[in-house]
Image 1: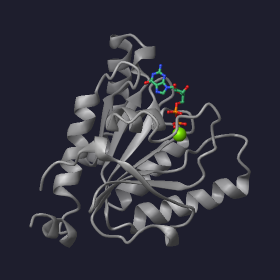
Image 2: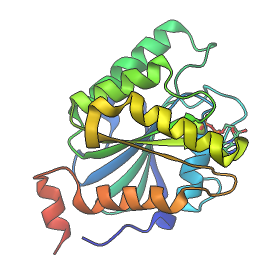
Image 3: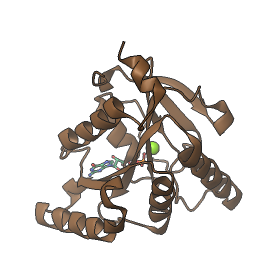
Image 4: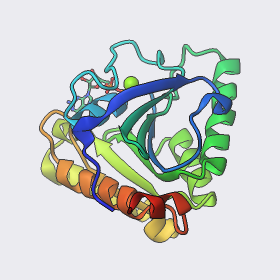
Length: 212
Ligand SMILES: Nc1nc2c(ncn2[C@@H]2O[C@H](COP(=O)(O)OP(=O)(O)O)[C@@H](O)[C@H]2O)c(=O)[nH]1
Ligand SMILES: [Mg+2]
């Protein structure tokens, strides 16, 4: 199957619940991360579309799953950010449940990009989502973003620490340094998305139909 054109991404819909997601066919790659980690910026950098996922100075505002189509069968999904103190507990708990269900049940989910600020990696909730994704056999690729805030040496040292902390997951969890500001790691991240979007979940019937 051909590689997707990320610069063709267009907003499709916002889904506040699983029931409002589009049909579970084709392939999706979803982005998750703590509020303010740099998730929207990373999606904008990867697509080359400046205002795609609105980068916000007001953390915790995105409380829907936002879907973007790349082509007829492939989508990017911006999941709501977590960890923002001012969000009411009931809202946080509802989202945890929705995201858990999404990771566990979404058949078209080919991979999860977990965005973490390289200065604050692997918080408890980040680890929770890694656990849930891998239990559902969804591969996770970590972007340690804002790498421009650290020296190259410090960034690579954090990468090594993150990798050794996640060693038990084997090849299901990969990680890299990234920066939306200076585009460090952009090529590596695109290669990972290309691989998920062209290989997809093993045995996914929808992938075969794309090859015609
Ligand atoms: N220095 C630096 N700042 C970044 C980077 N990515 C995002 N930011 C800043 O971090 C803040 C939060 O970014 P945003 O993408 O809205 O985070 P989100 O809440 O995870 O979607 C904004 O002020 C961005 O300009 C990066 O790679 N480097
Ligand atoms: Mg955002």
